[in-house]
Image (cartoon, rainbow, N blue to C red; front, side, top):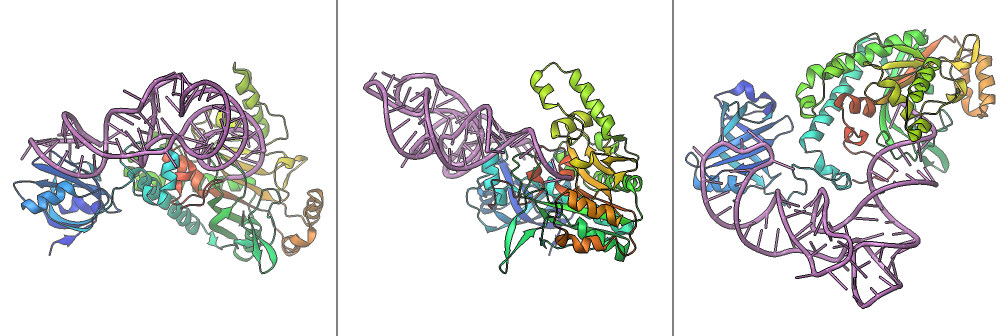
Length: 445
RNA sequence: UCCUCGGUAGCUCAACGGUAGAGCGGCCGGCUGUUAACCGGUAGGCUGCAGGUUCAAAUCCUGCCCGAGGAGCCA
């Protein structure tokens, strides 16, 4: 019995008789030769059927086997520079083929398709090479996130998905019935993490998060994954050091372990090689000046209007795009106006109108991938803020309690998995970075 | 919620007031090394829906539905 192998291991079996099991990705023939390209989840490889070498019935099967039919093919591995595939360079000289199921006409072809069609067929689209590559990078990003945090003293503490109230009170939440009461799908685990650090020092939660925002852009999903590390005895400067090490590790891991996938995606990896600590740090005030300079240099009145911004407002994505194009690495922007951010952010010493908040903006126009801050640790200040933001004190009793029993300076941030994967892959749409995206207009399939 | 663009064969698109077409995919045939192969043949349509203008509407007008991109908001 020949050994069944995975396509990713094919180069280790040169000259051996082996079995591949998978699906027909594409097929072409030249009369005496049939090339059946198969994929098995680990890679893509071509199986070559030569009329003179195989029984006539088998040759006819090879000529007619439909795209996406499930097959088990046995043959001899040989090196050939002409052989396409991932990893490529090796092919199977086919000798036997069992067709487990003859697929019906597959709607998705190896060519360009429209977004609407592909999204409606997402359950089939994920079989395509580019989607396969993106989702494998995603899996690696997620593992790198956990590996780095686990190795650096962060304890995984999952926070609730069903929550009693808005964590930040600003964004729209999905509402659900909770035995006659209202509950909301979590938009952040941060407040719970602030409780967890008093038990574990450094923690992170990692899970889906839900936002019912009516955003119709390529940077938004209604359900997305976010990792939120939180650390006790950590100020904003120490937070930035954590973030740059963390993000650099994620990028480096993808470069090392997903080179073939990034090549499929035609990613310019030299842009990613530069992502090493330290990252540049600029203040909100400096960023505002840079945007103003860029704006002054523009001729197009429409774009000038888009880049208009007065002190006190948060940057929009046009501002972020212009700003990040000036930097080769991700850039920290810190010290946002207090009123543009959430209620729990520590004020800047001597400048209460500014908060110790920091966002990390990815290069090449990919925008905000993390948002974080030092949190208010003083009891009276937090109570004052709840009032100023007109938040119900009862709902935050437990959160306020954390400032009564050994309060310490602490900080944390959230990193959006899909935005990070989009940037690392160098692709256009967030929706391709999760197997079944949920957007404003889609909950199917 | 607002702005812009779009909906024609299974898919990607053309036809822009006068008989609805091509490429890919499917099916049939040909070809020793294909890389979205190539060559020949063939089937395939309520032009998003509802009204209107006209001798005549995929095409012009009105309304609606659906989708995409962007703004705001955010990861």
